[in-house]
Image (cartoon, rainbow, N blue to C red; front, side):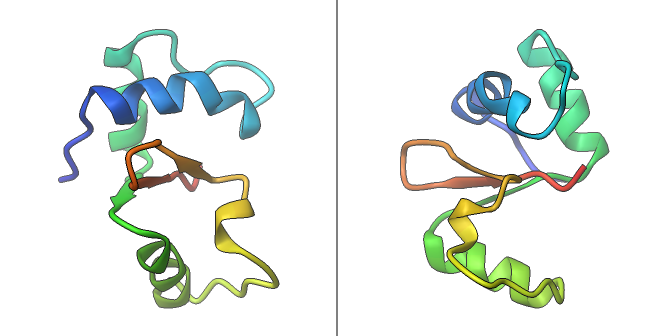
Length: 83
């Protein structure tokens, strides 16, 4: 199971509108439940984002960081949400 710290939860809450027309979470607790439910992943670098997509067999035509489901946490880590 993935641990989602405060920075990850805040990042998701602030950016969830990139994925969904309406909020799926309104608190850090709800965000954590949602991220656990969809098995969201936190990776430590740009290279790990690309590696994640390659391992999942997802073809990328450009920069994986421009994908809607990739959120830059702001501390060098990235949150990948496939929901």
